[in-house]
Image (cartoon, rainbow, N blue to C red):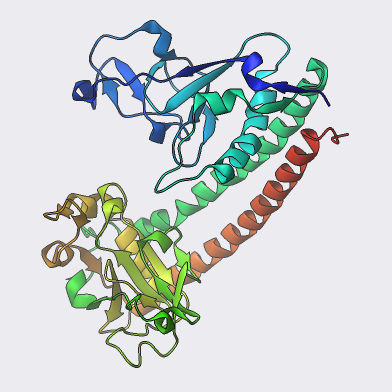
Length: 380
């Protein structure tokens, strides 16, 4: 397959350094920042004057120039191209835009791995221009793009199904127990701080390597990406809790983040399904009375919007939930039979979600295989 220099077939426009003092949360002209590339929408607006050259249209191909080097097509209304984001447009009819869309991730990942960094990786337009692009005839490009589009559409539908499944638990909770804040059913209700001891973990000393030579999960905010956790990024020695004040937590412990910048927009709550430990930026609930962990975790999650209004800022700028905030979170306490029925329904949802996730993993594997074959001339 013929290889060409990408820069000979595309126009690359770097974003402009718009004056941040003229950014606003509402206005007439949206502005695309690097964090908006993947999600395809923005909540930032620019109130000053601008050059029309930097207006991005729906369907334009964008690449984030810092971090993960993400690429995505813009899916919202016209918006301004801010710095550290670039737009890539085909110059002529010899390059199909969808073929380029599917090719770029593989090339950008290779650049990402080859890019040295101290804290964050940076990408330049010059490097993008020098990418070697396999360029088959336009009919073959369209065939390849069509195949990849179809599989990618299936992946998108599967992800959407997973999102809809995530919405089932809050809906069931509200149907069975009502809103915890207004408590329309008049159920027994206690502040979170009275449900149990809210245990803060800690960090073993890094000066002693033996502390980190083990398989006991040590959860921190970076692990809090799923409702159910079975393992952590970091692990500590199994005997560390015995020789320190760090508690070994039982299976099915509900934990949530109380310190970190993630609290600026998200309140992560998970059920840790294995024996574990946590760090000092989290709280683990050690109940004083029996309460189902799935019920408790859901009761916390459905109050996320309200909990975020209780978040404070520490002197050094970090977001935090202090004891006063935690005492203002109400927890319903229905009969254990009702909690058990709720947990039974959640278990069914979990099984459904697991099936969808397995199917998504299979589609991801298929897509990666097709991509590799397509850009090596082996897709028949």
